[in-house]
Length: 577
Ligand SMILES: [Zn+2]
Figure 1: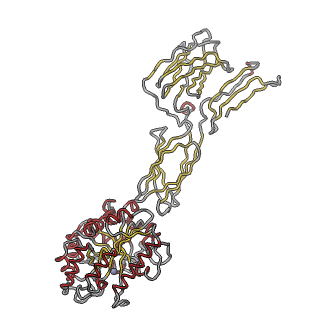
Figure 2: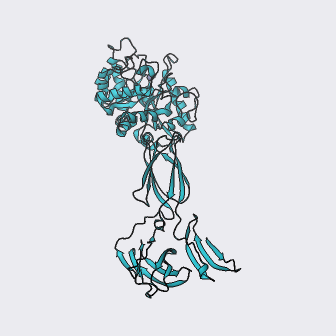
Figure 3: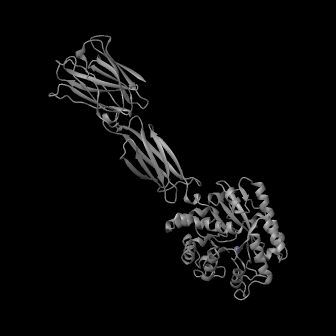
C-alpha cells in the first residue's frame, strides 16, 4: 500500500511537500518513496522513516497432544530456535492443559531490521575524510541502483550496476552544498535509505565505483519481514516432532506427538471377551461395560490380541467343543460385521500385513484342553478355524493332562494320549500354553515338544505363592525352550494386598527379566476373564500407562518393545508358520 502525506503551510492553501510511503502488510513503513518540494524549503522539518519499525510483537501459542488419544500432554518441551538469529534458543513447557505460549518481539535496531537479501549500513561523517564510505551487502547477484537525494527529496545522482553477492563499499565524494542528504540502494524492488551529512560543499565527485570489501556473502542478521523458527516438540515417552515455520502474524499451533507405545507393536496374550461376544456383546463399538472393544483396543495401542476361547466346564460339561465352536462363530460374525475394524490372522505374515492404526488383529486360542474332547481331529478342526495356542488345561484336569489346581499336580502328568496331543500341536503349529497347568504335566510337555512353550497369563510364584503362578524352575524351563511368560494383570495372582497398582505388575516383569532375561517377558492381561483389575490397568485402553511406567522405571524402549510384543511375535513366527 502506498500512503501519501502532505505538508501545508499556514500561509498557503496548497501543499508545500508531498511524501509517499510504502506500507507493508504487517504495518511496517518500508521506505520513503519520494519527497517533492513545492515551496519554501526552509519550512521543512521532516521526519523520515526508513527501514522497518522495530517493536512488532507476535504471540505464538499452541497445544501439544497425544496423537491417538488426543489427550493434552503436560510438561511437554517446546524448544524454539530462531533461525534469523542462530544463537537464539528458548525452551518452554506445556501446562497441565497441554498449552504453551511464547512472545516474539521483533526487537533490534533499525539496521538489523532490513530485508533479508540485502543490507545498507549507517555511515557517519568524518571531518578528516573527504569521502563518505557507504557499506552495503548483497546475498545474491542482481542489478543494484544507487541514489542520493537531498533533504527535500530531489535526486542528486543515481546509477545502476550489476553486482554479484558480497559485502561492498561505495564512496560518495559529495555533490551540492554542505548539509543533510539521503543515500539509497535499490535491490529487487526494495529500497533502503540512510541519512548522511555532507560537511564540505566544495567537493564535486558524486559516486565512486562500488568495490568488494569482503568476499563472504553476508548473513542476514535481521528478522526481516517474518521470523523463521524451528520448533521441536518433545515429551517423555513420545517421539519428537519438528516444525519449521515463518511467523509474520500471531499463530496457534496444534501438535500431536506419537507415543513410543503407539509406535511399538503390541500384542496381548490373553483376553476372554469372546465368552461375552457369544452372548451378544459387540466388539466393534465403544461399550461402557467390560474391559475390551475395538475403540478401547485402538486407544490402548493394541495391534493384535490373542482371544481365548474358554468353554466353562461347569456350564458345558459335555458340550465343550460345541460351545467353543459357537464362540468361534460369534467371532466370525463380529469379523463380518466390522470388517474395517477387526481382522483375523492365522500366521505372522497376516499379523504384520493386517495390523494398522485403525483396526485390531485377533488371533484365537483355546483355553482348556477339555475343549478337544479327547480328539485330535477336533484339535485339527480348531486349527483350521485359526486356533494358534491351546492352554492344555484350565483349572480342571483332563484325562490326559493335570491342572495346577489339581491335588495331583506335582505327581500326575501327561498320559500317552496327552503326549500325542503335544506332538499334534507341534506338527500343526499350535503353541503350547501351560498357564493353569500342573507342575508334572509341564515337565512331561517339555520332554515331548520341540517348540518353545508359553505361559499366556501367569505371575511369579516367588512373589505371590498362588497355584496359578510359576516356580523359578518353570520360568527357567520356559525361557530355555525359547518361550515367553505373559504377565497376568489379575490382582489376586500378583499380590495379597487389597489394592494392586501398576508397580506390582512391573515387579513380576522385573523378576522374570532378572531371572531369565528380557527376551522371555510378555503381557497376558486376562482382561474380561477377571472380575477385579489393577489400579491403572482398568481395561485394554490402559496399556500405554504400563509402557510409560516401564520407561520411567528405566526400561529402554528396545526392551519395552520386546515386552509389548516383540518376544511373543518371535515365538509365534517360529511355531505358527
Ligand atoms: Zn485363565
